[in-house]
Image (cartoon, rainbow, N blue to C red; front, top):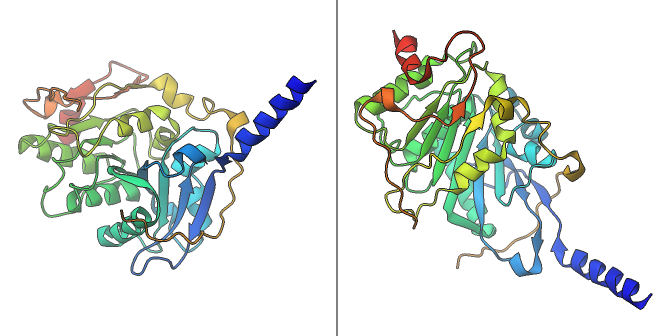
Length: 316
């Protein structure tokens, strides 16, 4: 009996030492920035001041507006709510107009890094559709701040390619996308390789439509890939040690554990005072854009998969 009581007491004490996961809604908090949701995972007393990775998730056009809850419809925070285990702080801003501004996003990131215990050497940017355009814009403007980036079914509108070759960059664009032409991504990839700046680039073209690619946000492999990169890595190589299969893509939602799903409700942000206070990998041998690496092994349903050579078909 005494042993049972002691066990219960220990469980209570352990539970009391774990700080709950939080979702905060920041509105009008960053001058000339964006309103945003912020997810912070649970911490124990021993990890309360541990610096965590920071992820910036950029939504597509359909989530734009002034209803901040819209940014929870899909993406990283929604994946966490569905049971994806993720030890990272996540920023999900909302733009009220079409398009993202890199300087406004940077102000939001600076605000968060000033107030939360995050590792600035492990800052990652991911986005889809309009968010894919925004991701590439952030990489262009702040390559020295971003450890790795994922841009899906987007495009690139800057006048130069500066910065894009400095960051491990994964570009994915569905071959069957009828909303944003795959040539927007393919043209950029070809320019990078033709200019000799594709050594840190991965390009995938699964047989997906536009919205189907959102499943990637729900795969733990994406975040494992991101977290393998660090600004302090020597030569900052791109990691090619992960593969996303068609089976994983199709089971993206069902692979999550419903028993671990969270009922996250946005809360008013707490007052938090300012807190300012090598693994070598050989670079892949790439001689032309035809040699670009791929991390998605996706079945093309009918006929042989065109693999890397498909890019030439698209550009003809």
